[in-house]
Length: 220
Image 1 (cartoon, rainbow, N blue to C red):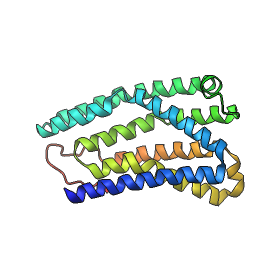
Image 2: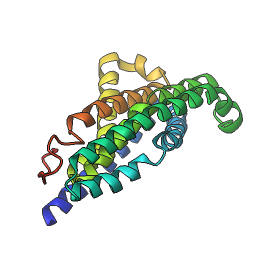
Image 3: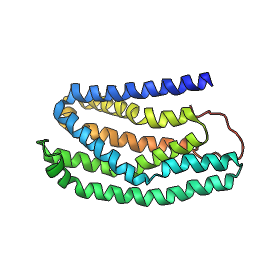
Image 4: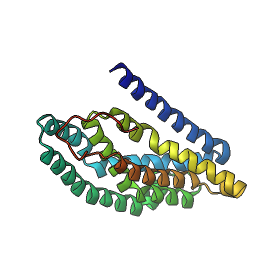
């Protein structure tokens, strides 16, 4: 129990460090304008993702854990598949709404940002990856229900920002200063990182093949 808690805490600290590093890279290499666009795009993404999940992450933790304790793997799989069937269209709808409302948000809500074109592009980039983000959170919730806390913590706290740091730093090192002229580059890095993390989350097997038996946490 102590080792598991230490691992969970270490991953959370790593996630916070990766998040702060990503912010530092943006502010140091791109400046305040790019940081502002990224922050507002991230806020838009997070709010839309909440609607896209429609509370299914909490439902996963409750019902998957319940059916697992009752050793009913068929119901565990049924809950997971039903959740995805609901979440995918809901998140796609949230994605479309955010994408189409980007000009309105840029002009009427986030009116202090001068570069409206870049802000609209940033919000739309974020909108495109709402569905991958929702799938990432639901898979993480399934891991939590199975008490695979290291995998849950890695996906929720670490994956996105660690990948985003690698992508943004790598792009700057490869492309040089020309890449720093794009105020939407940080949002693009975050969007690609979200899509990559969503793909990785399925590799964690959120629903193990034998859900009726207790499995050790070998997520990482």
